[in-house]
Image (spheres, rainbow, N blue to C red):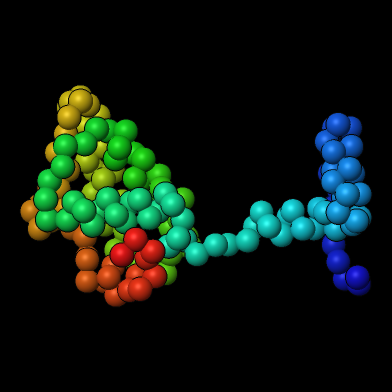
Length: 149
């Protein structure tokens, strides 16, 4: 194992004992256990199959060309999900969601400015206040890769 880097970490004794027991049961060293856990924690999955992002995709598709009553929390949640997965999306798909993020943030600023937090109308469409969503590019980028379609 030449050229490997060493990572030092301080952990509580109870955690050490648990890790040691697990490694012993699996017949591996503590170092092997840590390497396995670290490798699994940074494994990048296909972002198009993450449950929360699939929810956002389905949400946008089901509300395409129509308006929907929403609350501020719903809009914030959609922005957070897109932001969480944004860096793993293809550049073409990132451009599609740039418009969504910008318009939804603008929508939230209006909510905060005017204080009507209860029921609001969110539209995906061509109007100035609507969120323009490029469905053609979206379908091209996700063709055959979304399990719900």
